[in-house]
Amino acid sequence: MNTYSRHCIMELWECNNEFLDNRELVERVMVEAALEAGAEVREVAFHKFAPQGVSGVVIISESHLAIHTFPEHGYASI
Image (cartoon, rainbow, N blue to C red; front, side, top):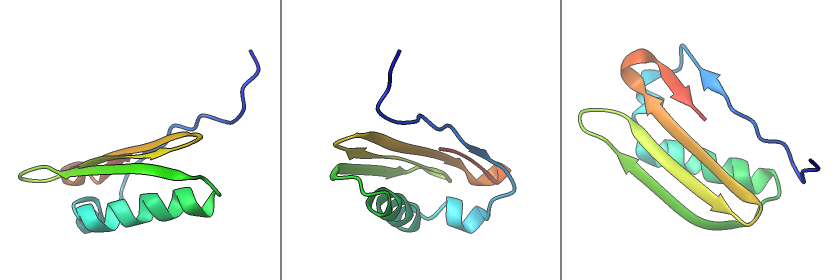
């Protein structure tokens, strides 16, 4: 099957817990990453969980970027 791009899945360990729990910072970095890649951002939705964690998605014309953070484990799935 021919595809137009790559689909990358990243699991990141030993991440900064404060960064992973900061919705505004995570959102900004994800949007900047999409723009830096030359993507066209369509919609952005992020949620801060209590007591900790962030999940979000950046919808781009080409596909999407998504993240789920687990600050208590220093882990992010992107």
